[in-house]
Image (cartoon, rainbow, N blue to C red):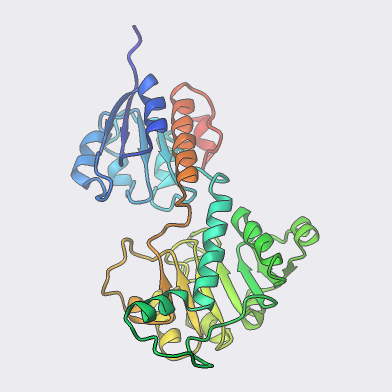
Length: 328
């Protein structure tokens, strides 16, 4: 009887994905949902694993991979993979996969919801009501910014960026975009307008950061870029923390250089409750829930499970981060 490959799962995952993996593999799993797997346990488990099913919360660095005696695949249940040393994995012939596409529409929904909530001060207004401070109607009480007919600037016109642009059309927004490569087809089908980053920042009423996190995009939005924005502008980041310099953003919001920000991501996650940005009333902050719908999270888990099984069977997974590892 063939020996089943050993798979370690770094967090409790939806049952359909777990059941699929159990059929073909011997499973070990960190059972906690609210606490990441401790590093010492991950270091111990990686020595036995043929496959690793992980999340963004785990640091899969060279030091960890040096302990991986027989690891063949790292299957990440996320689109991003900046927590994984892909080059170190590639040198060892370890396949790294991720889950793009499946969360596009859900993340676009959240991005636009965050834009609306920030523009119309919904969280601030709800807290105002619950504290019993609503005494009367007043013409300028909790007034926000109009979204309909405004100019939206999208930094990073990938799948999610295009999905946000489609939603913006329903609000009759003018949509500008800045991207590493110009996208004529999207310009034709969505009516979006390509521009350079500085022009986008200067002209937009709302700026959505949707570019991947890379060494080139770290601190892409810093003090200089924020100073280019309108003092009535709103910044939304549902991509990755670290793309927006948080110290510069705090200063810009505190001093009224921009009007508000909606953030689903932070450089350090979970973000500390004492983080300066959380002290500002013009910040709407969420705990990285961009893809957090029941349907999408199950699809992501199933996709990651399928990738892991494909690699363990010697097949090429559907979404490989670094195809050169396949050759090895």
